[in-house]
Length: 277
Ligand SMILES: Nc1ncnc2c1ncn2[C@@H]1O[C@H](COP(=O)(O)OP(=O)(O)OP(=O)(O)O)[C@@H](O)[C@H]1O
Image (cartoon, rainbow, N blue to C red; front, top):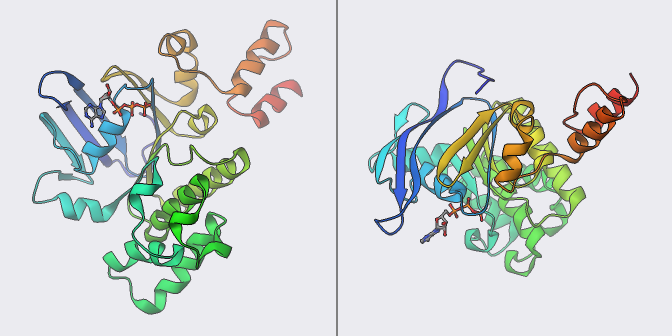
């Protein structure tokens, strides 16, 4: 993995194996490091083990063998609560995450758990709601929101507490394209400004293109790691795993065949630059 802001790893996994039934290993002895302050996208075909990995990283599941270190601490029964205080996760299905009776209460929950003083709380709640475009829903009941709105609230809850590491497990999958783009930009901005380590499990290749590092899982093993450009360059192998490349990459590859571009582009801005050369 490439970007390393301070030489320390936020996540360090060694020989991690996990099985739900004690027989079939869903993760098969994987090892990897995620540098502190980096943005890592985790991709892989359905059932490759991405969500299982996320649950192991916050101690919701216990490894069969191997070790997980988060921010230098080995994850075990003694450290799990401390690690959860420093690590936030947003799941794909927000219904399982609501605690408060209003959106504002729900966002407040994580802040209360972290003993944030009452006089600071209101401002943090309002900022987080604005970041995900949910200001006018602060007094609404979370259960009455749409799937995408619920995902926004779940993300706001994590943004408000701004933990050292945030894991997104397909957390924007229900958002419309504009909402997805806006929230991805907000997450990217927060990551850059506050140096938060982001681990994002996603099927959205446009989001993968904006990450620093990519981890590709295949049948419980690590098939590839590298920058988005390195990973997308192995398009044939990605296709064998039912994975795709970004739209801009495909377009510029076609333009290259016509002699109209020199390099495949990660996003539309890069594609336009290729065309204007
Ligand atoms: N609670 C469970 N009990 C038993 N097996 C499970 C459970 N959850 C997941 N599995 C199995 O573990 C494997 C990995 O599942 P996981 O949800 O981690 O995959 P994923 O990569 O996140 O998939 P997707 O892209 O579809 O979300 C799959 O074979 C799945 O059937």
